[in-house]
Amino acid sequence: MNDALQSLLDLLALEQIEQDIFRGQSRASVVPRVFGGQVAAQALVAAGRTVPADRPPHSLHAYFLRPGDSGAPIVYTVDRIRDGRSFTTRRVVAVQHGKPIFHLTASFHAHEQAALEHQEPMPAAPDPLTLPTQAEMLPRYADRFREPDMLQRLLEARAAVDLRYVEEPPFATAGTVREPRSQVWFRTDGKLDGPEDEPLLHVCLVTYVSDMTLLDSVLLAHGRGGWAVGDVVGASLDHAMWFHRPLRADEWLLYDQESPTARGGRGLGTGRIFAADGRLVASVVQEGVVRAPREE
Image (cartoon, one colour):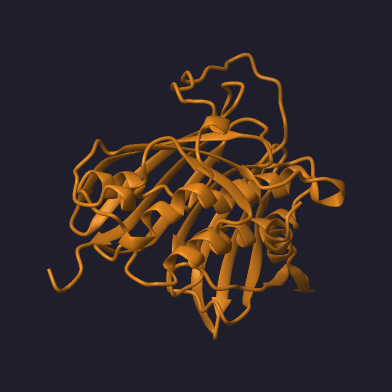
């Protein structure tokens, strides 16, 4: 396990400061605010710590309310909404400087055998080991980034994750309109073992990564390169996930993403996450602010 992955796991190891109240640390990200995937993953950890281990999360619905301060801790307050025979529901509010910055509702489901089961087939994609790593790919486009330290910030932000683009990312083809669809393979850059190898943590790590690239397909539809290039202004507005089957964040997962629409300064991204064996393990939907810079 590399140091970056251990640092991410430490970030998800929340401190319990009172009954159903947790505190998490923050760290700098590529954008000048807390990375949305971080607060979503930490909130899900907080919710999960109040639920029996035999009830994994099956869905989450969240809203990003205010930009988070990456230099300050975040307090997560969990409300035990319902403990049913099959389902458990939790609501989490993340607070910084006395104000809510994030709201999440998560539902957990006890395993059950069911006769009805189907899924969409996994789309075609190349073997992830044939694709360049971030360290191999990102330096090729360093001259396109709007700030001199952007390359290093991107490398550091993604160091805990082995993320590989199937086709060129938006910042590589800024100015060229492409089909609003993208794919990435990802896994943690190291295996999880010991006490950290628990189902809840795998789901939270996938939640963390799910916010990294989901709006790429919106950018592709308009020939925009994104925050690193500086030709859009944007932020996540809401985020929803459904977890269909068991998954491991330290094994290859294909994230198939597309954008059905954008309008009024908002863009919608949808995604399906498949295990390498073809199982559909999660679905994701996110809406975000996607605007042209003021000077345009």
